[in-house]
Image (tube, rainbow, N blue to C red):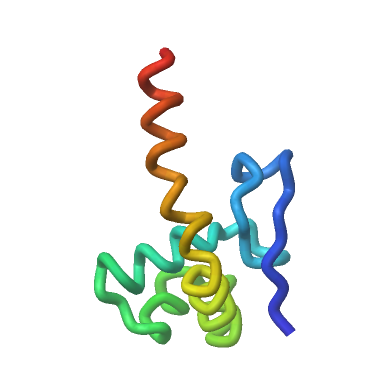
Length: 81
């Protein structure tokens, strides 16, 4: 079973697909904004399984409020520099 994990020492604590280091956000962007199918995402990220992709998408859509806040936080960080 695919696990979505967080590690403050990796990917700035962003949720990643366990054992891969690939951010949930990257999988969701490939699906939603780039138009890749889950099978194409597996081709693009060979360390992912189809189960991993579906778990990442389920996490993304189940926690959308968390991801809605990410661009704001990044913009605030960029403005501070």
